[in-house]
Length: 331
Ligand code: SAM
Image (cartoon, rainbow, N blue to C red; front, side, top):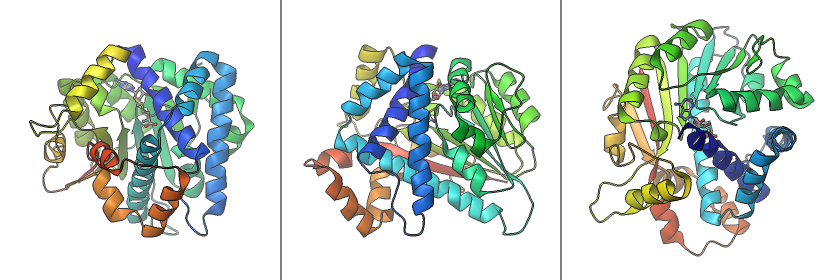
């Protein structure tokens, strides 16, 4: 099961590569052309790195990129842009220009996510902790270490462990999120309790059992004095006529031996909010469909429409209505 869960990272990465190849990502913002170019370069460098360290993983990614449908590319665009915006909003609130007060990000189940690279170079007092299973960390750290582009952006690793990456601002280390004692020890070792902290879980809580994910949330919310948790996940749907979650569970079980134990537990935005101890007062949730309708500017919507032919807008609405972005804050 752990291996099947680890391999979901190849899906996440291939979705990003596909969205880049079809020009959904990066989002077009005037004046940000340099960052957009770097975003593409970093992902292409990582894909090449993956090819040289694991042919097997690379061919999985490559196959998935070939078969990506327009609805998936829309989903990846929205997921990526909505999370980036939420992170930018947190940083805007906590990083005052000229101030030297540190902020930190803890990325749970980081997989191949490369956000840390650009964020660390843009925000001087930011520290970033990436956590994932041992095997995923070993793969990611080899790719980062082998490539001069990542070396230049992150600085050379001082890690004495074979698997991991460590600089004075970036730490990639292995951690089983189901093991709360290990999580607590790592947070204590690599992060600061009273520093504004953003916790990111992007398609991670959905693979954990209910008790374990609850313990993880309790541990983190009680450890940091002040924090914001950004979580992106699928939800099963709470309408009795809604078959989305059940079909997704069956498909994942049959094709991948993969479980999403809480898909039908936290199956609506309201129920998902209850994962966090801050709910309901400081938790906001949007479905990706709401985000698309309300927050994507018209010119971006027009640009997306020109990229690939999408005939099934109803299908897009159904899919996007079953993915949420939650933001829970505590202090
Ligand atoms: N967050 C990344 C992204 O969105 O690009 C990766 C998402 S991938 C779907 C899920 C990731 O969570 C995988 O890398 C997997 O190894 C990690 N993960 C899931 N459960 C975990 C656990 N108990 N401990 C550590 N990592 C875990």
